[in-house]
Length: 376
Ligand code: HMG
Ligand code: MG
Image (cartoon, rainbow, N blue to C red):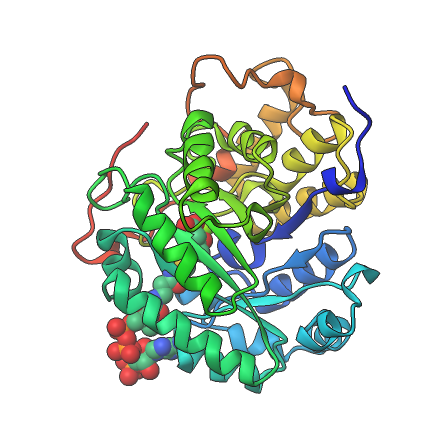
């Protein structure tokens, strides 16, 4: 194998304070969220998504976004974080943290600005069903909103990241997503000055071969998307998240979203479970000689701490049992979990049985008409 070079390194976008917590039904105290952000900021990840500013009725867990953003800890981090100014002054390589806040519309952006945000993330769906369920509008209307947010954000010197959900399957209709729709969304967001588009496999239905096909489609299209502008956001509902991350890496993607302890899911996407776990992503890359900049030991401490804070007693019991008896005879703690454990060409593995991912129930009542799609 050739020795790793700087361009082989990956950036980790830690999404647990937003994606990781948004679907947890019991209330997590604001102080725990702030503490999580603070601990994550010391792990060496490149970016920590702080929270979302969305309709509180849609995502009650993150209704305290103003308190999180207004806390002294987060304010201090924001002041030292990476904003558009620092990017312009070429300070991107100084290890400054990016601290995006997820917003669906201009109202969210205005609240983010009033609370010192230096970066926001907008989100659209590549499919109609999920767009309606998640943000109550069509794909085109979602794109218009995102473009408008990006325009105003840029006028205010705020960096903008973008997400496209449902890149492989619509979580509502369970129908496959046309790659052309993912391309259209990606191109529209990049044209609006969004610095990076994260491709969201919302319900983890992707496979390595789908990942390769989509990335090939996007980067060889007649209006090609530069792979350097893409990030991977893989949910691990079926235990293929890590394989999909690795395949995207082989296709040239160098930025990956992940969530410590594999927390995560979307209240509006039946079947959306945890994001791929940061400690597993870091363990896999470092085990293959690919630099992440993350201190795996500090990260492992955060993972242990956050499980104790956000899991309920029954879930913790299962987690402790699992630590004693790894189901495949290997540790999934992240430390030493290398690619040797992955058979990227082999048959698709069974859905992950991690209690963190499978036990966080989806808030179906918030979805109204939406009924669970059973994948497992
Ligand atoms: P709507 O009902 O069509 O909009 O919701 P509205 O303008 O009529 O507003 C309804 C209420 O929300 C009003 O309050 C607004 O003021 C308020 P009321 O008058 O009823 O008291 N409101 C807001 N409040 C706070 N912040 C805001 C905001 N906007 C309106 N920004 C809307 C449309 C988009 C607001 C709603 O559908 C919504 O908030 N959806 C968010 C859903 C969400 O957060 N989903 C999870 C995140 S996305 C995800 O997880 C996927 C991702 O991880 C990638 C992947 O995995 O694929 C990113
Ligand atoms: Mg997500």
